Image (cartoon, rainbow, N blue to C red; front, side, top):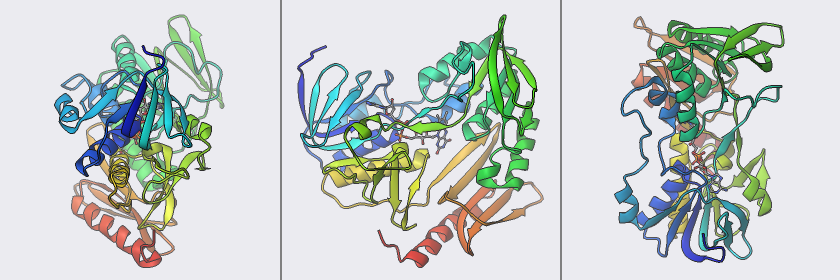
Length: 400
Ligand SMILES: Cc1cc2nc3c(=O)[nH]c(=O)nc-3n(C[C@H](O)[C@H](O)[C@H](O)COP(=O)(O)OP(=O)(O)OC[C@H]3O[C@@H](n4cnc5c(N)ncnc54)[C@H](O)[C@@H]3O)c2cc1C
């Protein structure tokens, strides 16, 4: 450790998730000059997060995380990774960041890609040993070790990470109970029809569902953890997965007095924050979408990559903007759902199901298509994704 180390960069990326790494790569590919440094509090070289609740948790090969890039790619692009040395302060006035090691990094441009952290529910026992969150590779490894010796697991939360983790643990032979206040998984986001369908898939994967139940407390009882719901239901297991949502990591942004909106860093469609030469991307950003004509909070892998790319291009002096329809795929058991939507509400959902149980749900708001969910029906998904963007562009004129 060199407390007074000073580093001069063309581009500093804070965060080694998809958004930060994509920004560094895009900056180089657009001809960006100077040193490019990606700093992270993660100790692992950048890896794919989506498999942590899917293949990795199910125990599928390769049995470890998939790297985001080969080590040679970073070398070839002239990108330096500085792991386990997070930024502790950011000063847009002097255009510097301070790292935990004490190093001061000066930047010409900086991309804040600090992502989000898992939230533990505010109930007694939420921090007991045997309770797990699932965001990082080290979280996944700890969960895998615990699951290996567990007969039963409780998953709290029916968002996509909760549903995926529940199905994956059940496929390993663990007796899983999923507890959620929703009366069907994903009902608030995807509506009752999709919620019932996901419930069925979870049940088929062997997950027992306790829906419409809010966790009240967790207690240690000998080697077991006991979950009690507000209605008095009791479930016992050796492992608890808390999949109760995430919170954007905005500490640095707050310290730097950046404009925030709804707990995220406010950026325009070019990913520019309220401070010069400072961009924010991915889960931490509340970004204006040029096609939608409004800002969106998005927590998807592909959009983190794309926002990172936009910021990298902008930092290198090339114009770019985010106008894609946000979307993600989720694999629950062995079924993959595809979802593309603006994600900020709908008032009508039309379901079309085929004899082979493939389906598409088209979500509209005031008559405009704003989202699509599909299973086994890629043509519907692709066509609807295009239609969503066209409808938005027609109504806002694509203003950015
Ligand atoms: C288990 C799981 C499964 C998922 N599956 C899917 C899926 O199937 N499809 C999908 O679209 N999305 C999925 N997601 C969501 C997706 O992974 C996120 O939307 C995406 O990772 C966001 O990327 P990001 O780069 O903005 O943030 P992150 O991936 O969270 O990366 C942020 C990085 O910043 C680092 N960091 C934070 N603070 C600092 C600091 N002060 N200094 C330095 N470094 C810092 C963090 O350690 C981390 O490396 C999944 C998420 C999880 C947890």
